[in-house]
Length: 523
Image (tube, rainbow, N blue to C red):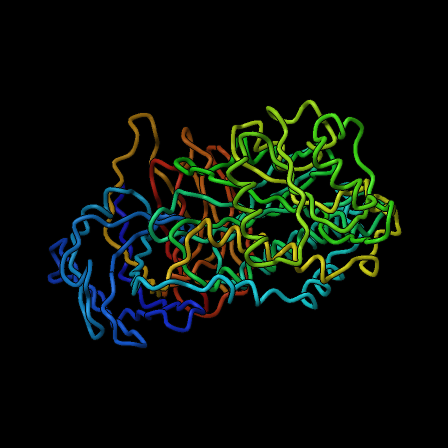
């Protein structure tokens, strides 16, 4: 089997949280001590506004920065206390070479162990930005009648999350012979990366409505939370998900929950936005599902005493989700006291009351995860539901902003914000792939090479019999420029036309058992 060599790559640069007192990290250099050794020294600069000592640790990623693990056995300026200044960490690359994936992204994290002000995050929620986002996404976007518009909405969602410097990928699937995809963005936690808190919303709509409340409002809320929280650091991970074809029977969330959760991930809680913009404080504007008074007599009495006004957020969980309900209620009281929240928790998976299973949270209930549907009540309040009149002009953006604030506070406190800074660098090493006894040698070819950014890729015997696999293209500074998932097959032939600057790139395919790399030269 061939041996593949990936050269040492350059500096990516540091990333610092918005928290004013957070330390910052900059990687200066990473060197082998000798060309024939596995010992590596990484030099970095640590700064703290108050010159406080920090805790420093190092992590690594083999999936383009989506998830990170602790790098064991590192020595030097790691641990606590580490004083600001130029510092170094030593480690052995054997642990990295055993993971069998290229390239490896290293991350140095430094924390001064100070508290982070969640109220400062909440204050950044912008009702005008929410309005702009709703106006942008309030267009007919049905998977058959407006497929091209739905695709543009999906692309826009992907691009917005990428601009937040979040690793984004698509979970692609087929539904009724139509190509669909969920959009998944991951903000990796620095201590418990596999502990996941999800904020989600579905981005498809019902034809021929613009779907401002259903569910451009939810998409806007999810993006606003991602915009703010992506600028901070957390102990646990945050995922931002846009689900496709929800309106056809929760298809996207069903496919995700049952087939696409990353191995080893532990989903701690899900905040599902399902229509969060319609508000009417007039009496008798809020209806309730049949049987509500029997299931929730106390809450029914409260709403009745308030003359059935449509002026509250409904937080819908099941009994298993009671801890998550308490977290949302507490965040609302503390950070958004002007928001009226009515919470309820159904027995089992909510099958006793089907009206409360009409969104993506239900798929998480069915797998035993804690999840809340956060909603303005849909057609029990908004008489424009699933009609052409569901427009951006009919929504209340102050109410929407308050809903987003409460959810942001709940998600942020759950993920445990850190006063921390981080810096990344991509590291490469020689990797010998032993191969499978029944597996032919992989051929990964770039045609032509060099090229102008328009080229073909041929992969022969790289995935079979393992498959499926990821295909990623990196520049030598470690930045990922392209990613797609490849289905199981003996051969793939791809034609790509990428807007790449002149330079050398690395094409990497990883089928979960083996990694293969080819050089791409753009002139």
